[in-house]
Amino acid sequence: MIREIHKISKKSIDPILSASIIAHIMSLNLKSAEQIAQLKLEIAKLEQSAIQELLDRRSDLKKSLAAVEKEIALAQDQLNPSKRRKFGKLTKKPDPTAFGKSVPLEELKEKLSFAPNKTVNIRKEGFNALSIRTLAKANPQLLRIGGKGPWPTVTLI
Image (cartoon, rainbow, N blue to C red; front, side, top):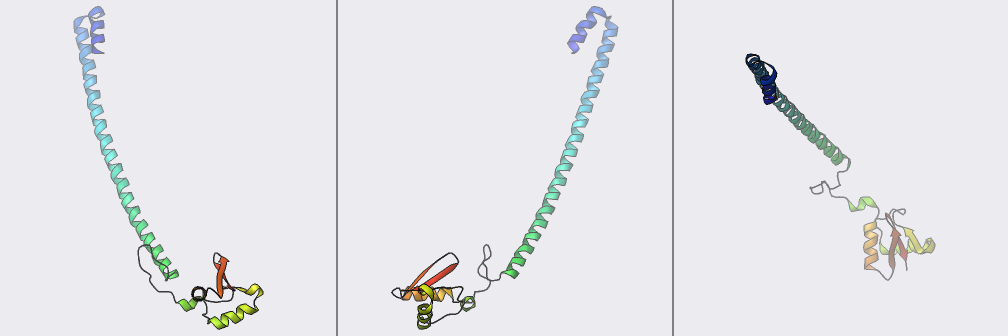
């Protein structure tokens, strides 16, 4: 740009006037360069303060999230004390008799003999599914476990 001005100044404007124009343009360029540098510094300061503010917000949010997760975990432990926690052991061992009554083999055979198709639903009858399964495994010639999903059945063969 300066070269173009210098070419124009040599042709149409006298040398003293062209020198003053060039000096003025150079001073404008220097001023604008200084202003650009100052603006860049201000932008960098603003950028740094914005980044710091975002980092502070992020750390505050992480702390509050951790507190909320801790409260949720405590609430879940209070609601379900026998459930496993994510990386922990059982907080309380389940009572096997709490899930139903255990019946001896003779009583079960008698109940099954009067049932339709010699089959009963273990849960509907209130039996302990674990004890019934153990009896069926010990006596495969007498009992068979069936049913689908959470509603197992036992059949007298």
